[in-house]
Structure formats: C-alpha cells, structure tokens
Length: 345
Ligand SMILES: C[S@@+](CC[C@H](N)C(=O)[O-])C[C@H]1O[C@@H](n2cnc3c(N)ncnc32)[C@H](O)[C@@H]1O
Image (cartoon, rainbow, N blue to C red; front, side, top):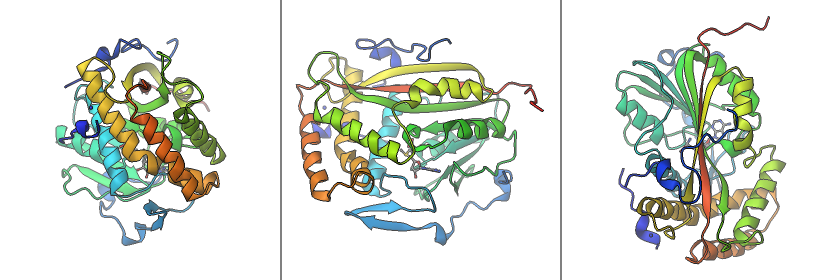
C-alpha cells in the first residue's frame, strides 16, 4: 500500500528509533462456541448484515446491542488504512511479533475492520488459513483465497471450537471491549496449546514533555471527554494498556512480552523516521477527528452537532500547530497458551 502522509503539512521505523523521548522496545508491562472450523462456514456475507444508518452526514453500522461509536464509511476506512500503515512502520514491516510455530497456521484477526491486516497476513502466509471477523461487513476489492471474513460480535459467546488457532490478533480495540477478561478467556480457549495471542494498540495521546501542550489544552479536554463518554457506554480505553498483562496472565497465558514506542503528532521530531510516523499520525488525527468525535459526543454526551463542529475547529487548530509537540504511546503485548493446560475441575 502506498500512503503519502506528507500531504498535510510533514522509512522504515521500529520502536528502536523512538528512543529520544521514551525507552524503546522496553518491557512495557512491569514484572515481568459453535463456529465450526473455518472450512464449514460460508465466507459470503448475508445481505441482512448490511444494516447501515446515516447520522450527521456519516454512515454507521448498527447491529443488535453493539454500539460502536466510530463511523463505517470511506473517510473512516481511510483513517484505518493510515493506522495500519503506522503499525507497519512501527514494526518495520512485520505484522506481528509473536514467535508462532511452523506453518501452516490458523490465524484469527478479531474485529478486523478494513481487513488489511488479515489480507496481508494471508498473502504472506499462503499455506495458512486466516479468518477475520467484525460486527460490520468487510468488502475489500481483493482478498487471498486462504482468507475468510465473518460477521460476529466478539463479545458474544464464541462458536469457534476449542484449540483451533495458532495466533489470535487484536488491534485497535482497547476502547471498544466491555469485558476484557471474558474476551481474553475466549481467546485462550480458542487457541491451540502453544498458540499466541497478540494485542496492538495506542494509548495516552498528546503526551508532552517540553511544555508546549499543558493539561488544560483542548487536545486533553477532547480525550478526557471522549473517555467520559466511553465509560458511560460501559467501556474504558486509557486503562487497558496498564491492565492487559494482568488480564492475559489471569486467563492462563504465560511468557507475556510487552513492548512500547512513541509516535509524535506531526513532523516536529528531528528524527526522519519519527517525522514520517508523526506525519501519518497527524493525518490520522486531523482527518479522523470528526469520525472519532461525532457519535460519542452527540449520542452519548448529548452535545449538539454545531458544538461538536466548534470543538473540532479548535482541535484541528492545535493539531496543526507546529509549536505544539505531543506524542502518543503505541504498545503491543504477546503471550503464549501453555502446551499443557491445568484443568480447574
Ligand atoms: C478501531 S477499528 C480497528 C480495526 C482493525 N482491527 C485495525 O486495526 O485496523 C475497530 C473495529 O472493531 C469493530 N468492532 C467493534 N466492536 C466489535 C464487536 N463487539 N465485535 C466485533 N467487531 C467489533 C468495528 O466494526 C471496527 O471495524
């Protein structure tokens, strides 16, 4: 995929290159169903699954009890393409870090979104079988033959048979899961002994260590209000990174490895790689701000659309101000299911 992030104002980069502001590749985390095998389910998507509604000029996907606050339209798809690109820059081209076993593998991408991650993994591992699921349909123009997409709520009871995957990948979901321990336990059950779970996400946006963005800035207010709405919706975003290792270990996983890096907002960092990452992140924020904000602020927090629009003007102004130097944490965690699992009964 060719993405040019220089359009709004700003090489390969791993976490290693992000050391000027934060330790790189550090251990971030302290101390250390009934869904037959993919083969027996159709990969086509039922027309009844297209359940879109339009609000404030954006398209949303509504499905039963899941109220996902981000739109499901081309603009949001562009933002997700950008975040995918950011992750591939961060991981120097890799799609995951878990040292999974020999191929062929069975890989599950939970809440796959655009499906880009699943498509690339399936393409790079042609002998493996990849499944991506989401509450909303994913219709990429092309997909490898070893990939299937399913429409599912990942917080429902899973229908995958136990011990059926070598890798389960969850990216960008920190703020959208109500019951993390339950989700991780379902991952544990669905993984083969020795299989890996890997989570990748962003946290703590707009940190600043040179005094150019204080706690009262509109950017912090934005995050604070968004999280307030998210908590009202029964979810939390910002606390997930601090708790996830404990949750993963409590589910039975071991050998957890956590890594973190930082992504500047914009091109202010002198390092070339961080500059490119920063420009992609800035584009993601600027172009994604409306989609990130609209539903949460109008539906959950009860704001008027005109007030959201005013807020967005202020947010974009600060985002595009080169004198404001902020950065966001990117974290990942992978852990393994034991080869022999103790039965609790
Ligand atoms: C921020 S996007 C991340 C997409 C993808 N994982 C990525 O990294 O590009 C979150 C995705 O989760 C999906 N989603 C939200 N709640 C879900 C649920 N309960 N079950 C399945 N998918 C869900 C949304 O439809 C959306 O595609």
